[in-house]
Length: 98
Image 1 (tube, rainbow, N blue to C red):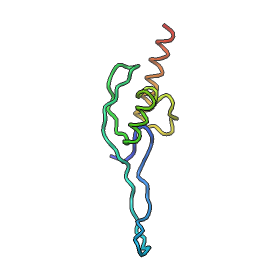
Image 2 (image 1 turned 90 degrees about the vertical axis):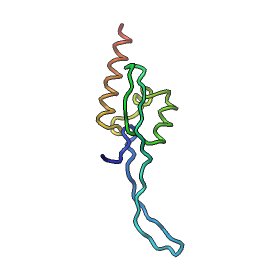
Image 3 (image 1 turned 45 degrees about the vertical axis):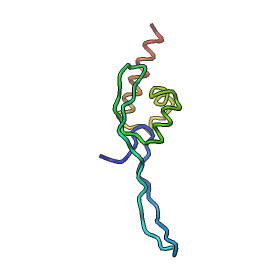
Image 4 (image 1 turned 30 degrees about the vertical axis):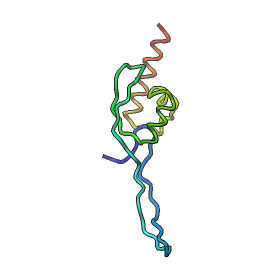
């Protein structure tokens, strides 16, 4: 399983450890991923995703999963999240037509 956030696209970054004597060695910065269940208001069900802790705060700020997905560009989303976004759009369009 890759270490990539399904909603924001955050992934492992690389950099250097720099000691006091300025000796450098390579290191990896891991995203703080957690497996969470989020509720979609439009779909009326829960979805299990692996997202970063910072993304979870962003989802809360956007008033839920639906609001976050609708404002996020598709290039940042995983395939699972893009399918979920399309399903939410379809459900919301059906509600406005009725």
